[in-house]
Image (cartoon, rainbow, N blue to C red; front, side, top):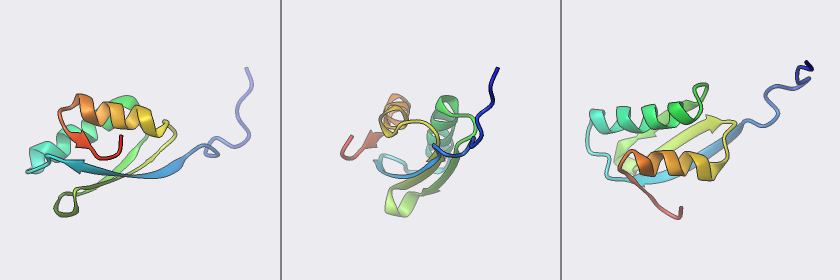
Length: 77
C-alpha cells in the first residue's frame, strides 16, 4: 500500500453562508454534521455573521449536503 507523499495537498479552506443557526445547540449540530462527513475537518462558526468556515479535504458540495441534512440552509448551494 502506498502512502501519499503530500497528505494535506487536497485540504481546502471553504466558507459557507448558513442561515437558521440561532444558538449553541445549532452550532454543535452543524459542526457534528460536517465532522461526520470529514472527522478531520476544522470548523469555525460565526453565528452573528451566519458564517461557517471549514478546513477539509471533502468537496464543497458534500459539506453543503451535510449541513443541509442537519436542517440548515446553505446559501448558493
